[in-house]
Image 1 (tube, rainbow, N blue to C red):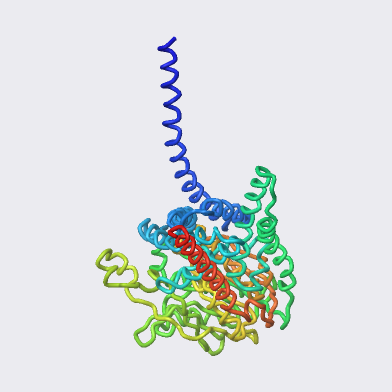
Image 2 (cartoon, rainbow, N blue to C red):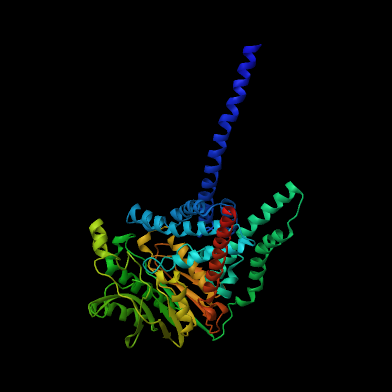
Length: 535
């Protein structure tokens, strides 16, 4: 009996000795796994899927992971959230150039999310923490949209909400207000669940905290409903019939560019095909035609044969065409939109202002070249930036030009509208990224911009997806990918400005100040607590 008792005693002692170790590992691994998985959940909420609502549980879980932790823990958990979100979201950046640039971009961009995680952890100890935490997230997006290399706003929470109930808030304060509402609602959702569990366990209701949680969920939803009257597709300045041409490319990938003449011929041919349909009475005659970015990478100002091809297409359709060209002027390259009149030829131009690092110019060229000469070979000459907004007057309509990558930046789109644009065109070239999700992510941006500024947005793309988007964000027509096609539609012209257009950067500044106030409060409270403990 004594031996048996001793054996049982030893067995009982082994359990407590191992259990704390297991619980310690669980405490460490569970938050890390939850952070990465909640980032993945946020990715799944983005196009081409229409699961916009998954952003709410994604931020609810992120709030659970961060609340009450130290800023150092928040830094690491935020980085894991950033990796879970950005690794799959930006995989298209490595479609043709390999995983190196994709992974480098994600590693850098996730640092911003890590800093946000540290900030959210710090403010999570404050009263009304969901408010401060959501503002910290928007401050992180604001930083990411500006640095390094002029910023990279891809992955803003707002760009995943083109199909969501919060979309009307884009007309109130642009992408910062729309994104803030989604993040606030997600953190508020966690707070409501947390307080419900706490109340059930203790039997005590903390009314102030419960009110904050409920308001964090309710105010964004009510605000979105209240903002719906700002969203309209009614014509204010009449309507125009627009044609968007998708000529297609000989092949996808980086070497599509080696077939520059073929790309130009394809777009001219599709325009002439449309002209034949118009002449046969099968399609309404457009008032003007929009070609995509890079539809003529042969400079029509320097190459008579390219000019002749465009002239022929313009005369066939008989209306102005906006042509996307690569132009060399005074030894400098420009990604340019050219307004081509069927009788006069080129009459106006717009030079892309927000050019793409590592695609249209190479930052730190000598340093990058020392690491990988392939980069310098792919980007032999840097493009130069335009300096003025681009608004073409086409058959009396004022069309604002936002070239491809520019659609991700708040200021480039707004500047065209404040300069008088009654509709917006986003000429793009996505052939480099094959059939990746990049096209659908960019299309969602254009839908958000349509609501933000209450303008029709046309998206002519070399290889798809080209689309017609109404001022309420709805797609009325779109093409497939890697097919030659054209879209013709009567669309409304509008000149009124939404609150988002009028306010510009002010809502973002206000939210950054809220974030700074919350962080200042948290740091001050931490210092006071430390001094009290020392005393």
